[in-house]
Every structure is written in structure tokens, then in C-alpha cells.
Image (spheres, rainbow, N blue to C red):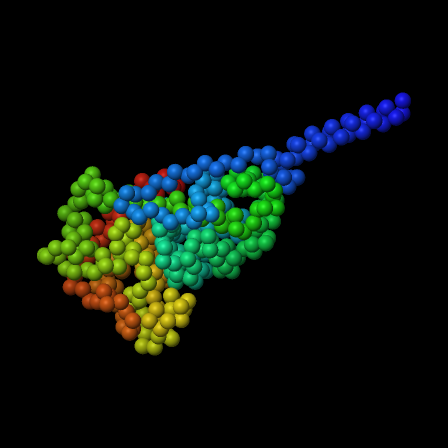
Length: 361
């Protein structure tokens, strides 16, 4: 009888163990996630007809679950050292993914070294990222602000632990990337998810785009500003704008010295920009040409946020800028009246995509 009882108890223990093991296969607390469905549905990226197709890495194709995870991570302050600053703290949807600050404020009140650029259409920036072009892809870009001591001051090892211990993220990582265990959550998957979300931030349906499609008519001031911008007709002054801010992104993706500082020795630029990365004398004081899409929402302007308004930007270019030997030749004194400046600004305001920004909030 005892032998039978022992056998029965042994069988019952084995059965309970098997049931618990099966239950734990999809339980983040057990470390196993294999019973949770992997959701690989492609994300339907909507790209404007006038844009070239976005170059998306073969190993990080967009999925609905991956974009959703990336978006949650982008807005989550958990990624910072003290859980007070998120990516979105410096890139607000309502400001075209800038923050309205001269220099952004990070963990413990530290200030970033440069103005936060817009992230709209960042997936089309194929000639380097950041103001100085220091990295070549979005996955690499995301690493920097998370660990920058002036921004989020995070430690990727500690961040990975927080994500693995989180009550929700293991399930989201499983759905997005099909990982089998919580231990598979790491820096690489985190940046891949955020990069997927950033590639969905496409802006190409402004009032000007609708004008190009024949859907709206520009006002007289906007249209005159358009002709000034593109230097396309006699009777308006030459602006040189369209040579550097090229359609449809309104950025040539190049790096220029636009005459912000008077410098006679290339070693004396207050910020060397791309030259500080490349070491080339001709690139000292050069910065990436920002897109003018949604520019009415992205003040203050320039890499250091020195200009508070579009009017100040206009005055800088009309003046011809300041001397240094590698100032771009298109930066020269312009023969502009107050009306010319007002009309050009009126055109720039047609590049605002209010519908996109409203949906992003």
C-alpha cells in the first residue's frame, strides 16, 4: 500500500510540475516567453509619392509590433538614469519633434551641447546623422543620447536589466522580435525597436505639397515667396535658398559653413561641427543642412539655437553672414526688401504639416 501511495504521489507531483512548466513557458517571471505569439505583421509605411523610397535595413524591417514597442520606449523615461527624461522630452510631436529650447535639458538639469533637431523624415537622412554627421544609421544614433551624460545619462547594462524586470516589456519584445527568453532583451533589440518607430515619422503632406498636387492655391504672398525661394523668375530677388534646401526633403543632406561666426583660423571655431569629426580643415564649422519642413514649428534655429525667430534667420542670410575662409558661396549679401523677407517667410510657413502634428500628439 505504501508503495502504491508513493507512486501516486510521485505521479501527481510530476503532473503538477508539467502543468506549471507549461504555464511558465509564457511567463516573463520564469524567463521563458515561447508561448506568447510572435507578431511579424509588416508595418504599412506611407511614403509620399515625391519622396525616394526609404532605405530600411534588411535586418530591421518595420513590423506593427516593432513600431509599437519602439514608440512606447521613445516616450518612456525609464531609459534615462533616473527615469525622468525620455527621448520625447527633447523631441515633442507638437513641435515637429524638437523641444523649443536653445539647448535641451537632460538628467539633473544638464544642458545638451547642441540644439535638438527635428526627427521628422529622419529615416531619409542617408548622409550621416546628428548636426555633425558622426553616425551613419538610426540604430547607431539612438545609442548616443541614451548614454550621454548631458542628456539621458543611462547605462545600457542597467537599462537592459530594467527592461527585463519590467512587467510589460518582455511580452512586447517577444511580440516584436520573437525572442524565446527574457534574457534575450538587450541594447541591440532596444535600439532596433526605437529606430523602427523613428522611420515612421514621415512628413510630406504640407500645404505646399497639396499645392504641388493641384489641390490648393497659394496666396499672392506665399507664391511670391515660393518664386524667391527657388530663384525661378525675374522680378524677384535671388535668395539661393533652394540650392541647399532641396525638394522634396528641403535639405540637400550636406554639411556647410553658413557664416555664423567670424573666424580667421579654422582651429578657432567655437564648435568645429563636421570638421571636428573628420579632421578636415575645409569642414570646420560645417553642420548638416536641416530640413525646412515644419520650420515654423522648430524654433530656435541653428545648431546652437542662437536665432529665436525666422525673421532673425532671414536677417542673417540677407546680411551675407560672417567671414571664414570656408563659408559656402551661396551665403552672400542679398538685395532684399522687408516685403521680400515677409513673402519668403510666408512661403516657409506653407511647409508646416498641421495634420501630421495633430495626429502625433
